Image 1 (cartoon, each protein chain N blue to C red):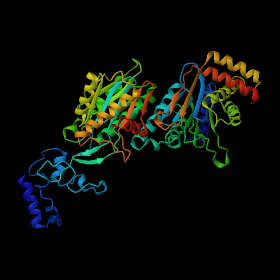
Image 2: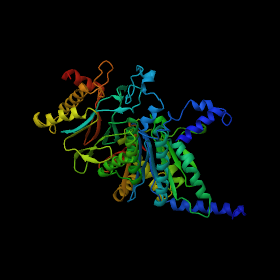
Image 3: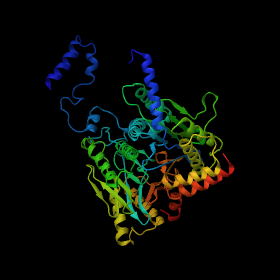
Image 4: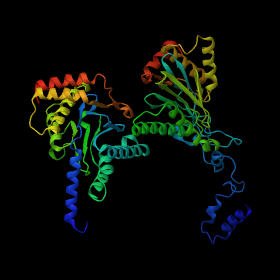
Length: 267
Length: 303
């Protein structure tokens, strides 16, 4: 196949289409900077989707459970060995992603004889203040998007992964309009849930702006069948204990309350 | 062995085979311990080689000849740095773990701000007596392995798993213990969330673990501390039902008692604001007492 470049390019394009199809149904994951740290939220049926990677690093992923698990373990091993050999302060998300995961994903994606990773990941690294928080979206082909505002782009205080670019774009559009940096995590739960609902509606029916009433109906319907999953990476003086999975009791109230107020102010 | 001596002499006399034969003669085989064979431990080897103890480290402010244990008729010896006197006991608020701040090498004070009560995870503490180089590495290893387990397996390591992990590290260290360097005799305290009770363990240098019912102590001042705690437990109204304030006072008094006749246990340096380390494990996790709080207790209780 390598002797015939056209066939290789075609194979990669087919593969891209296949992976996108597989990921399309994934329940979105959103994260924002807030006063206490970084809050991550998603809703799912059974499988856990938010994970602790290292002291200040968390991961959320959509895709095939087997692939997510392999990459999650790989990321934890890379970060842990660096942290043990040198120091926890030497573990950074940028290095983990660029030098550890990205080459692996690219190789796997472009070697068309082997299976690709069916996965799209969101990494978050909590900093000393909201300005140094890092959100990094890693694609199945090893390409990554950083929130750092490189090349004149605006700094983003949020990160999103979703089944498709359109859905992610809709969620990002909403999160861009609301500054969560000064919010408490309880308020941020409402904002993230609203973003999630917009994304989830987008993945079901590709259409334009949703009416507030529609959003609410959809949100309540989904809350009835799905389980919320919310985690906080605290700006803690003890970074090894920064990660907290928040108990589901009480979340529903925050989600509904937040939803109502964002619908009123409009998106 | 005589063959080696001949070879060394031959090299030195002839000077043809090795131009540096004379330089080699500066380290005669007897000093290298070759004629005697390898006897004794790592410390003995350093002594034979004439390696100096802490006494020559000017930055530590020690007088020459003050460092190390003199095991052979007055010559400067070498002794590993050791940290001493730690205690832990159960009271109404959980487990209190405390340690003095002194690290010694023989009769030399190496450091007076040593941290011997180390937090391993959200609700576990390890207190160390023995050689800090080994103990701190054990604590680092424990903390990393507990975190690694939690992150990869998506659940906390069980209480039994944690207690055994330390036991395994001690057992792996047995070689160093037998060589006379690196002995560590730690305490491990944690909270058992399933049973809703605090747990306290002590170990022997080989790694056997023992669960303490009420209290445990380790290090050179352990005898004094155990006497104090036994007295209070039996005739002083008991320890288990004590409130937080009384428990802190008891811990500080026990450490001061140990420091009274044990040079390896550091007392309180009020001028330098160096107080013992006191940490408490309760249901909600680990709490470290601030220096200010300890200073107040010392002041009010006239410890």
